[in-house]
Image (cartoon, rainbow, N blue to C red; front, side, top):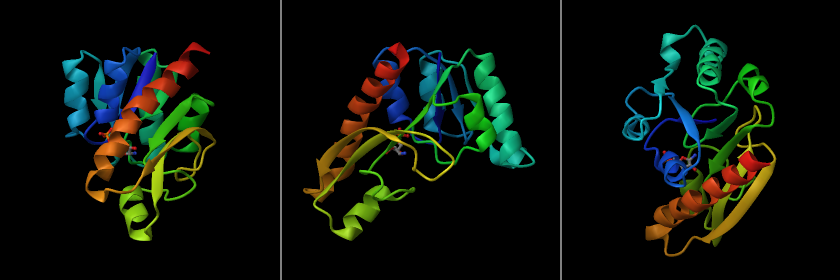
Length: 177
Ligand code: GRF
């Protein structure tokens, strides 16, 4: 009953699958995303909803929400999903959409959070799992874990490792509630 929204590599999707969580649908904003191959390998129904094929974001999101609900989705996880969700999508899954983000929000929202933390010269950054609203990485925080920036050469891998542990934990907690 979990639907996962993706745009790229899908390593967080893989972490959810490996944790044995009941992922029943994967929706991608990009047809060529590696995440779609991961869904296929796990025999999970998957589809791409590319913005260019719709009149606007509202229409794309309505079609995507319909498809997810047809697959039985009750809970949505944004795992590397690079688009904002419109209000009409959020209304379909109220308080049941989470996102994983590679910083300690509200610090460094947006698509370049790790680069932004490095450029700012902070000692500590981290990972946040939060509920999604219409803003850019602004919904209520559910869980955070700090990650030291140094050594910076391995920062991305260390952040990913925390994401891959934290996201399945939080999703699992929310699903059994
Ligand atoms: C992750 O760092 C996630 O926090 C961010 O985008 C990245 C996606 O990685 N929103 P993946 O597609 O799950 O491998």
